[in-house]
Amino acid sequence: MPDPRERRSNGHEPPAPVEISPDVVRSFRSQLTPGEDVIDPSTWAGSIPQAQGIAPRVRIGRSRWFNLLWLLPIVFVALIVAVAAAKGLRNVAPVERFIARYPGTIETAGARTTPGFPAWVGVQHFFNLFLMIFIIRSGLQILADHPRLYWTRHSTPGKEWFRAQTAIPNDPLWTAKQDSIRLPRQVGLPGLRHTIGLARWWHLGTDAIWLLNGLVFYVLLFTTGQWRRVVPTTWAVFPNALSVLIQYLSLHWPTENGWVAYNGLQLLAYFITIFVAAPLALITGLGMSPALSARFKRVSKLLSIQTARSMHFMVLVWFLAFIVMHVTLVFATGTLNNLNHVYANRNDESWIGSAVFAASMLLCGVAWVAATPFTLHRPRVVQRVGFALVGPAQRLFEHVDSTPGEYTEEDISPYFWHNGEYPDSDEYTALFDGNFADYRLRINGLVANPVDLTLAELRALPHHEQITQHFCIQGWSGIAKWGGVSMQTIMDLVKPTPEAKWVVFYSLGDGADTGVYYDAHPIEQMSYHLTMLAYDMNDEPLSFGHGAPLRLRNETQLGFKQVKWIKGVEFVADFTDIGGGYGGYNEDHEFFGYRQSI
Ligand SMILES: Nc1nc2c(c(=O)[nH]1)N[C@H]1C(S)=C(S)[C@@H](COP(=O)(O)O)O[C@H]1N2
Ligand SMILES: [Mo]
Image (tube, rainbow, N blue to C red):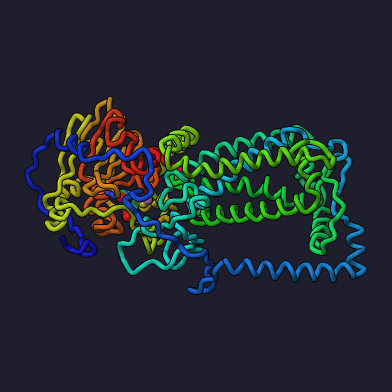
């Protein structure tokens, strides 16, 4: 076999006579493997070794990296200095006058009319924190699948501002999958390397419930007087917050009356969490959707997927910092009373709130510990429940048919990651070595006019070009110019019958666990403006790594659905009897979803 790196197709061979056989495409089904229903960590994802990343680092200047673990001693020293400074300040008369003037808590008349906490606050507070466990753990798992963050639209290695991985090796065919890292199993969900399919079901599924919980919370806040607790209504909140900060840091606690109103610092922290961080989590999350980004071009030009991903991470940092400080202060400023407020709706020093809190923590702890083993033993349940929770939303976004033209040549990414499993069969090698002169694209199934096309015949069809952005499920993206044939042209040629509902693309290459790579797409997306078969990338014949001689582009979907090295296309009524029946290779083997517009 030649060195794959030297493989290039030129695709300009004369057409050869072709016989069309409906059996050939159908026979591709027998080359598929169903995938497992239980995860064996030792053979998972093509027996990918459980490589670890490095401690997270932030880039300083061009190529120096600051290890974030240094923040631990730095923050510790900074706290000590801040406490010393605050204690010093408390001896300064004007500061004391300032604190006397702004003691910390503003008790408005409105707040005094509705003291105390209704039961729904406690219930929603609990749900929120319970869901947060899975949202954060699965979010970290998603980050670990492409442990690099960028501020630019492109995903150029070395240009990231954050990474938990070393520089990529000097290998032009290095894949994003090889770049993924594992997490400890009780930190990530589920922790194993490249479990992004399952992590995403956890993340998006619990997100859906979390958003619903949040929506109910918003409605209840504003239909009761409770909103006054968390929405500042006077500018005096700022001096009061500063005053509280000085008082906390000088280790002289302010007098608190949380039963009636929160202090200024609390008010600001809760307000930001509820009304800034939470909506931002949703917006930046949706900012990573291929379908939405292709449709809302103006927004996605400003808030590119990589900016959205970086900001989504910032939201995580806020939530983590908030949780640490919130929990610390709840315990440091009167545990019994504070826990009674939210967990027992009472304003006293009894142990009732603490007992309810302890029970709720036990529930959280059990769920936390059980989540990874459950996911590894019942991945299909996670896949199905996740799909049930977010499938309808994904489907909604798929109705979005974007027109080409959002990007220009200047937007083309200088670096376009490779991904997936490279083909190494004798069949592929022979085709490659013969410059694909013997290549046939076989299109068959529920069509009136099945065809087998040579590359020359494909190139003779009306030419379609688009400059679009690729969204890999792992988180990297890249803009490229694709040249080839619109799928509409193919549809006009083969004329699918009315029973045809899905279009299955078969690859010349295997997936990671052996068995041919394939993926099914809904037929209505085949007539979208941005759905095409590409034989050129950035004005050159498709390279080996990017899918020579032919690959799919369907820009409403994530990268794994863009089958490379296509050998056949089958029009079918449904895909339940193809492969494992889940609609594609990664769907069968790695528990992805057949609709992935988010
Ligand atoms: N045949 C085949 N096609 C495939 C894959 C694969 O493993 N095998 N990987 C998919 C994934 S996960 C992505 S992100 C894109 C990557 O395309 P690129 O290597 O051109 O960037 O190809 C997709 N198509
Ligand atoms: Mo991907």
